[in-house]
Length: 107
Image 1: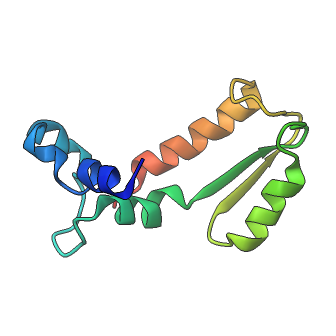
Image 2: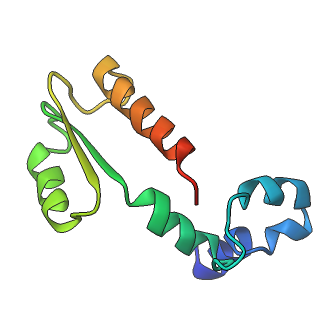
């Protein structure tokens, strides 16, 4: 997506067509916070976790480890006995764990 499209969708232009959905989408913003939801979500939600299967042969664990060394504020989960696919049971368990954690997070 272009910057213009992202701004249109996430920075309050879409509310002209979907005011009800926009209210839910932007709920939880504190009154003194920026109205730039991309910035808020990037800082508060998306930069939280790196999930890696130990036996992922498509995206080798060393890549996730190097990212973890650089992205120090993110949680890191190396999932033993797991590979690449998100539908593997061990991967699902960790994805659900962090999804639930993010759902409880107050922006």
